[in-house]
Length: 195
Image (cartoon, rainbow, N blue to C red):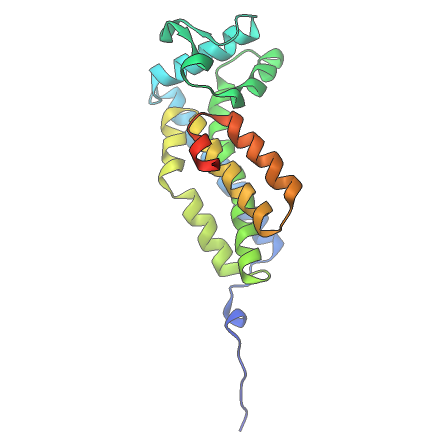
């Protein structure tokens, strides 16, 4: 008679790196296609998207944060300094498509800290839990919001917070300090999260 000794981790779905690359590429293509399709079908929130795009474009042209749609300055009404790197992208090609492409990209980048947190909590790779966490991240309400609004600044908060948790679990004080600073300049709603 043969006795089998089985640990719970032996039941993990063994996803190798090729499967994860395929998941990452598929998720990226899917998110970008949905974002671009919604934009070109005029299904994005025109007021919020237009105000953000005007502020970015006017900052690019030397009028910091000016948004005629808001009758003032975007950064005075809703501090979102995370948008300043988008101004640099306007130097390459001045188009609102940068915001359309960056919204789904922010959602996609969240897959990396989610996978890392699952690995840290399980003490190593666990394919089934990693896949489940990735699908939960892609299927949450914020994902739909990013694709509906064109570019929701609020999406950077859970992304940075997920990386902050990775730094906290790894006890990396430098990463935690840097991400705390990044959260504080992302948007004013992030301040209560950090404090």
